[in-house]
Amino acid sequence: MERLDKVLSNLGYGTRKEVKAIIKNGEVLVDAIEARDNGMLINPETSVIKIFGEEIKFRKNIYLMMNKPDGVISATFDDYDETVIDLLEEEHKVFNPFPVGRLDKDTVGLLFITNDGELNHRLISPKYHVDKVYFARIDKKVCEEDIIAFNNGIVLDDGYKCMPGKLEIVKSDENGSEVYITIHEGKFHQVKRMFESLNKNVIYLKRVKFGKICLDIKLSEGEYRELSKEELKILCQI
Image (cartoon, rainbow, N blue to C red):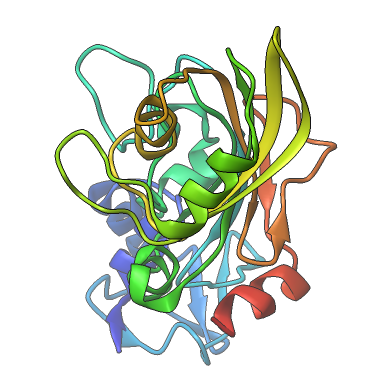
């Protein structure tokens, strides 16, 4: 059970004070009965709530897919840089969502944003072995030895040995390479540091797949959409 004013406030109908005034003015019906008590306890998932004559659809969680743009950080708040939350519409901000894991400031691509803490844990915890697939451009030639090194587990500059990863070469010559990388972890600057350990540098990085969900190619950088029921079902099976 939750307070009526909290439910309406969380759905974006105003601050607690503003919602209280709306309720006091008789603009809210709960199960066809006029609500006058802003502290009224209701079950938002089963009660029929109408405000200003329109029935509202309650949902506790939101699930978004964003094509993260370059220059934006994966955080809920920052004093200096624009965050992925700053790119959301107010109707989604009111749920106080957060990015699932993180992408570096200059890394683009698939980023999930939600307020579902349990799902977030399952998606980012290495013990669940959820694939994260990246497309990268490398400044040097990538070869079979690098594929073997990824498969064995790259040792980073701080001595940490990464879990075995998968490296697929799209094209490679003396001018550079294009590759796909599949990893299960999310260490700080991990993909870049893995290649630095091989004396190579990542010059472009984009996450294209998370688990079994691919980045929607219709989303331009900075755009986002809600996950479909089918996509959400797939994620919840992890």
